[in-house]
Length: 252
Image (cartoon, rainbow, N blue to C red; front, side, top):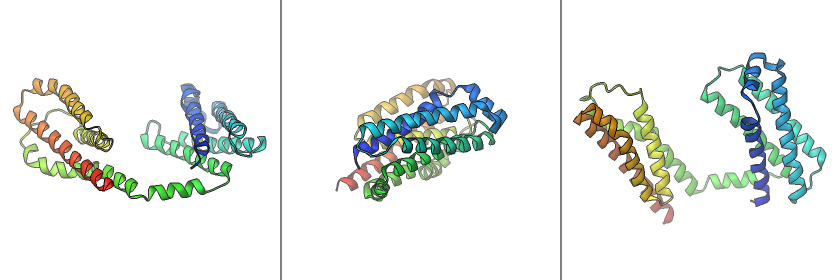
């Protein structure tokens, strides 16, 4: 893929992030939720995105070897503005503060920018290259490993620890917090192993030990201490084995 083509895509994404998170005051969002399509602040927000998109496309036409004129830049900005208005209006009708709707909103915006990028280039070659890259053994192997260390490993570790978890009294922790912490821990460990940063895994374990030391000392419960230690070691050791195995397979 041409680096200049990728620069254009990154520029469009950067403009979107600036418009959505740096140049959108909180009261604009509140007014949009309250007044929906009658909100003038929604219009202001859309115009900000249109202006940023025009700026990126004009700069791209000027600096990059892409033969597109001002009318194409205006058409691209209009497409972004209309789609942004529709997506944000739809989001305003949904329950506020839900992560799923926030992620869906951002995904739809990014898909529009990706479509605009392909239209500006006038070629589906980047999409074909992306598809070929996603089907490589390296990408499929890494994706599989990351999937394994989330829910599958959580179920496996829970079954391993079941014989000891029944011996613990209610410790007053958040529901499912341990499972979520374990997932994030394994994701970090797997990332560090794949990046050949095994030393950093030790720092991660040390940091977790420091954070948990005060809680375990306060409870003065030897069973709980042993349970947490055993669970951590099972989680980290299994992820290390998976990551190192994947590295050996990919390097062979």
